[in-house]
Amino acid sequence: MEMVGVSLWMSDVLLGHACPVRTARPGLSVAARWKRRQVYLRTFLDAQKAIIEDFTMNKNKREREFYSLDVGDSTFTVLKRYQNLRPIGSGAQGIVCSAYDQILERNVAIKKLSRPFQNQTHAKRAFRELVLMKCVNHKNIIGLLNVFTPQKSFEEFQDVYLVMELMDANLCQVIQMELDHERLSYLLYQMLCGIKHLHAAGIIHRDLKPSNIVVKSDCTLKILDFGLARTAATGLLMTPYVVTRYYRAPEVILGMGYQANVDIWSVGCILAEMVRHKILFPGRDYIDQWNKVIEQLGTPSQDFLMKLNQSVRTYVENRPRYAGYTFEKLFPDVLFPADSDHNKLKAKQEISYPRCW
Image 1: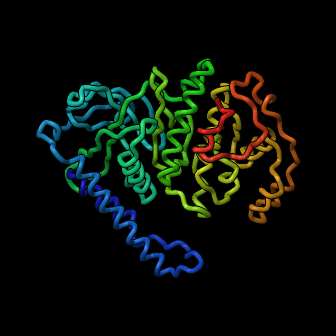
Image 2 (image 1 turned 180 degrees about the vertical axis):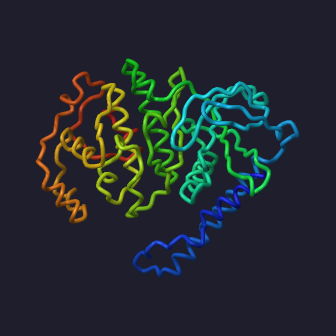
Image 3 (image 1 turned 135 degrees about the horizontal axis):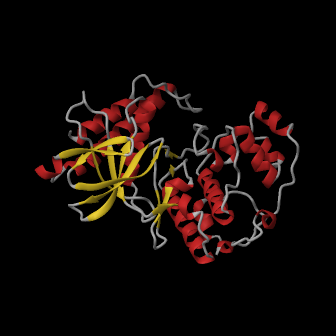
């Protein structure tokens, strides 16, 4: 099936005439906001069509041949150029297997998106991941090598396969290892470089966790899984149900408007887990997650509390007050120098922050 058609269909879902228009900002009418949104999305669609066309050029007959194979609990229908498929992971967004690409003569990872068109939310996630992986070019962001569907018509269309670089392991596995200062520093540096690049492009990842960060044996690190990534917008109240619970920033837990620095909080939680070999804030639910944060870091300042809506502020203020632990207490075998300032920094500030290295 021609992927230009896939792009048109997905973009039509995203444009969805049934989608409500967000409340207009002061000084901008609903009609003007809707018109601006339509222009933006149509421009985005034109760019996306060009992206997909890039994948359909210079395809020979051999590349268009498919075969089916059971991989774990799923059936993969892939181009014959991809051989030796083996399952390597699965999650809410899809199933991943390794394979050998006979044309590129290299090992690759193939991700089959789970029910990408079940509803508008799934379609948006699939579309975001496809566009961002193709558009974002950085050594610490996973590269997209190919994308295809085995179906030949819109009536049959239901599967999308993404072909990516294959790495050796994810951070869930690396966390269990004893890493020296040099390797730990290098992994952290690469995480921040990748996030800095995303933030510079106005993109918030929103789902950073060890399973979404992959490495090679030479300590090369790349960030993947952009199904929840969003464009940053100052003051916009975004969906609170993002980021796996353990790595959620307080702004997300408390339903506040948030910005790109929620990714930096997630990186900090991941670093702490690499140092301690256990989750820093293992909350069972939203409330327990918040309790774990304030028990270890202390009750936030009044300035922070005043940013909460009244009902949330009342709950937080009625909780016992905690002094929190010092950095040395939390990390007795600390690998990085302590710093008393717990404010989250932007990625570009973290990278140039002299006390990190």
